[in-house]
Length: 431
Image 1: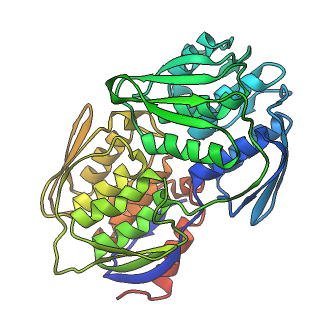
Image 2: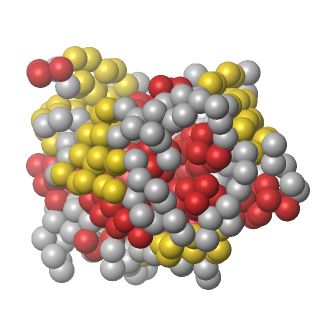
Image 3: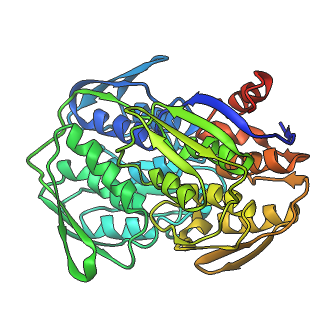
């Protein structure tokens, strides 16, 4: 499947945000650990979230996935040894979050995935869990999936490097109420993606867990979880997703005009809410209501470049880079070394994709610099990375004559993306 993107003028439209992928993952796993029936309302139905649901069902969880809600029959922290390997394909969130949780199963659990998943590091989490009672091995390639999970989760004091993936910490946190002892997580290194950890804590507390955040050495937070406060079943309403909504805000920023995205919580714990602050600094105006956010860019006001650290919000780096490519001054983004270990090497994807469209990009180990340059049409191969496909599609609306190959990869997080983009064109909602 490929999509051909034509040039667009200024836009003016309203669109509903898809549900949060991160919150859906977390709600599914936590509800599965609670003791009784929980209801998840307004979930994201996408490839990644379906992988988490399927994995939980393989481990003995009863789950009824309907169009607008999911009923989950939690087993009070008990999971069961699956009949075979649990293949989560390309869902890195499923792999990381379920690694610690699988220690609660009554027998060994083997998690595996796609060829790319087998290149994404898991070693620091495996080492940490083995120090806390696990007997976890990586039988094919040490430190990488597939991973065979067995043993216990004793808890206690846990030390882990926070500079690789926040999902390692989230995995430990979600399983911690069912550890044998209270858990205290101490971080080393420069922590990345802290907002995702806070989203995990938000989800845990919504289901009755007790989590305390305090300040440790070198300014890194310490997370303490009580093993006496188990998850309670309940009802969870999934809020809108700022990561997926970023593409529509970027469309108005790049092409000019106004977009209103409904279903977003302006006070959300999602780190990608910062995208709006970034666009304001680049020359856009933003206003919000109780559950919607409006962004406007007057074409008389040029987009400006900026220097910014984005270690806390990696999923919107590509979208910011597309806006930067349409700006009149250079942009330097730092704190991005961990982007090389996503669904693709996203730093390389940004550099190569923009170069294909005439852009001028410099890359460093932990930074990417985008210079103003005349852009033209071209072909983008997203390397099976949903965020690469969607971000370059938005830039394509400014440039025109851009072809996105393997466009179906967007089903990983936003199955309706192309239909929404077509709707904007077909309904002539241009300013």
